[in-house]
Length: 281
Image 1: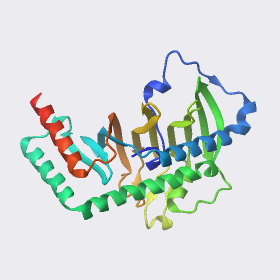
Image 2 (image 1 turned 180 degrees about the vertical axis):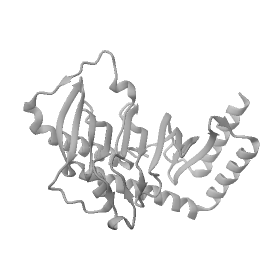
Image 3 (image 1 turned 120 degrees about the vertical axis):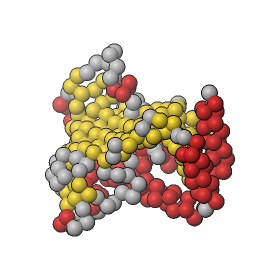
Image 4 (image 1 turned 45 degrees about the horizontal axis):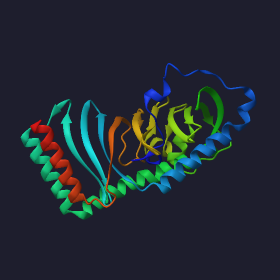
């Protein structure tokens, strides 16, 4: 899942270098803050459209008290994952057998795989729409800057009319974006809900005031950026995301390029061989 599949990102090292200076941006630059935000968003969308590479990476997900580590491979037919550990413990032989069976069922049932990938694609398309409307939905002002990194504070634009429930949530956010002005890339975005948000008067769900999210992106290979951190902590109930829960932490690492024509069966073989090698070592 790249940046536009759920907004933006970075690594902590980029943001907190001891050699970086930190200072306020002159008020004369305020007028161009919205222009900079629009430029960054435009470039992010362009990068998404032009990059069709496939990658293998490790994801650690914390969800409702359980921590799972998975190895994930992107293929031309969709993503394939294999569970490696639960709450810090490697899988038992029985659990590994169940993973083998789950993956084999997925490979043998193209319809199920298409269903899962369709849900991911729908979330990605929705997040892309939210990112596209960000420069219109928010008013931006300059914060501090650290060499090529610039902080943009954002708040709801009162003249913006949200076209959907998702956009309504997005519009009720205020927060900050760190952008890399040398690469024109979004490095980190954090936000929190300024008011409670109700859907259909609360019948279809709600989100409480104060809910927060954080997304970071990093350059994992020359010219290639990926989401590396996702933190969502929103209280309440919302129905619009199909694969993202209201409370979740996810960290991604160990990115490696894989062939773009990789099939699901080939990806399963790579994941299986890697698991065997790790068990034997």
